[in-house]
Length: 217
Image (tube, rainbow, N blue to C red; front, side, top):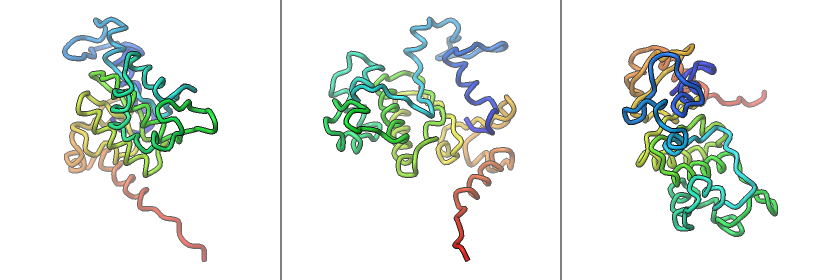
């Protein structure tokens, strides 16, 4: 899902996990209205990765076990590998047993996102919602986060909210929001050909990433 700030992307995603309910129509998972699914079951069916993923001041393993309390160390390492976290774990003094925030052990925004995605992979929820998951990632971390997205799509339906259009370029279907409504849907190339809001946003995005600071005279 893409669109200007305040266009309704996060609100629409929140309907899936019933942060609030629709006033008209319905939202369904597997053909079942989410209002007919028990709260605990619905929470098991949906994983969220927010743009500012917060991790507990506990070990990496404990942070992942929030999603699956009985997960083995082998399952945790596999989820971390799938989320492109091997480089993070390799430099931590005690690997997955390293306690975050202890002895000067801190992660960057992009690294936290990859750990959060590993947690979503471990949970294996049918639906994963990524809300601006690359917002705080530098270019190197963004590449790794996008590789982690690919792993998520192997087992879950992934709903991605993004401002960086490169993140959703290869999505199966893109929903373009504006002022609380879906104004365009389709794949990247289809939307470019319509010369609508998405096309205009893409042109602005391409212009922004090609912009460079000139040398002082």
